[in-house]
Length: 87
Picture 1 (cartoon, one colour):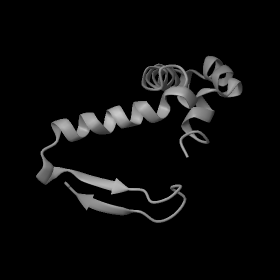
Picture 2: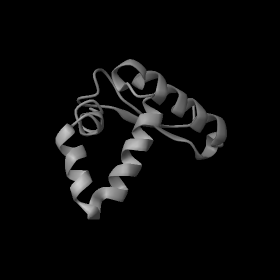
Picture 3: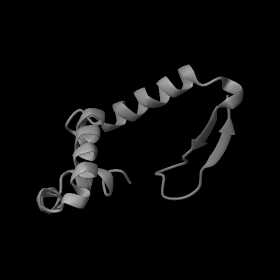
């Protein structure tokens, strides 16, 4: 899940400290922290679902239906799912 991967990394103090001393990853890490803070509005647990729903709505708004491919997660997202073209 996003909470156990991306958001966990965003909130991991060790990852942040390593980015300060590792010049090779510093630029990428800086971009990652900025992007995730904007997307999650600083609190993924509180705003994450709405952020994803807004993103999906925007994609549906700008992508022509005949070019839209959506993955539908069934249940809790741990297994299954399907692909639908347009709706």
